[in-house]
Image (tube, rainbow, N blue to C red):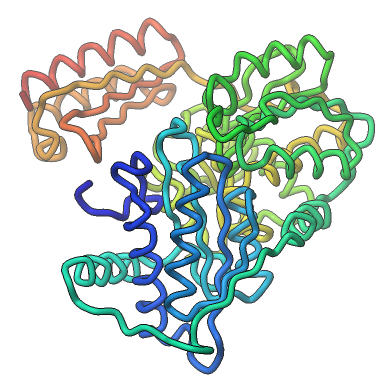
Length: 452
């Protein structure tokens, strides 16, 4: 698997790449590393452990719990809950560590292990690196220091976590959702119980699809990566809007009453205006990645709001938000972070806030989302090229400069080397789709000739 920790924990095919032995070993390593860092000093350590409904999560959870308890950490098993719920409970319960077992929007055979530090925040990169190093050294024979007797960790179920998280979601809503009919697509995932409960308690009339997880059907033709069923259900039931989550419910996409998709950029734009109105959009600034649609940037400029852009990945958005104290950020894919109420992307919270804006204004989601116009976007992946020379090729720089002159202020060019494959992504936005296709095709040809 190369380096174990990626941008969102350790992931792989469960029982092939990600085995029970690995999950146990990583958990013991995490406990030792955090103990060495002083996290557990002066008290008995506690961890919150949750998972999504994947079948493999059952044995991986057992392995993680065993590893932590064997290292002297008391464990609170919260069961099947969204990733943001585990992050929230880690902070709310004063736990020293949180562990989530999920592969998010990936297909069912995959799974993953993600660690949260005290407070529910993502572990620092240097701690992840140290955990990986300690795991590898012990995997190759270095013995663990193992507590015995009363020093071993105790394990208990914490069923109160469900109500505690739902109550938190309801408490931070600016207004109720009475009078709204909402269709929720839960991707047969971790929010299958939480999300309908939260929307119902907030006053909405709820219709659910994809809310019958059986351990095998997570993300299967449903959820935020497959919106067709949600679009049809919203129209069929005459709903005001639809909300789609992914397998671990850290993202949210929406559908308006006509069945049209509302993506992460549009959701961010709607929430930004709502938060400014309530004077909680600090510095009148939104954080997003360079992949956000140019229409999003133009909309914020028109509304007098600031946009800070980061590299692709919600971890970079979160880092920027935390460093400068910004309140709202996210990605086009639907990872939306409302930092006053969550330490990570929270799909249920995002959906509730979006619905609250519809209820509060009396306007349709279609009308609210029209604050920005999505410009046509063309993405071409150019394989089998030297991605390391994207920023140094004079030929490519000249071609990009010419394309930018041609597009002017109503278009944009982005060339990005893939982080995992030997290819370069060419993205072009323009007011006209034909122009975007022409310019993207021309640039793709230059990438082939200059970097091939």
